Length: 84
Image 1 (cartoon, helix red, strand yellow):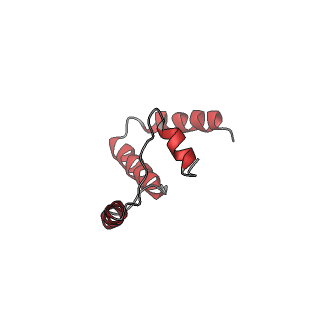
Image 2 (image 1 turned 180 degrees about the vertical axis):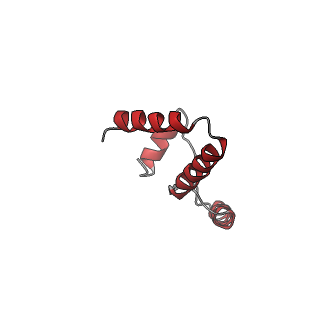
Image 3 (image 1 turned 90 degrees about the vertical axis):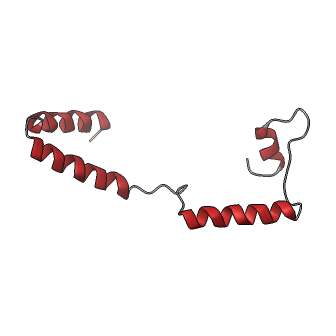
């Protein structure tokens, strides 16, 4: 099915239960669970975040960092460093 068809079917079903508060709460809770199951590879735990910060501070202290050159954009710098 195409997204437009799925949207149409979804809203048709939702209109049938829109006046039933208990059923709507169940549907909303289930939808929230489904959304939570989607993984975002950019998400990290608090521990991972602080570990990354610690490593970055260590690299900075060792002089392992890159700065923008005069007149250079961030994109240019990323290209120069091999990230783009």
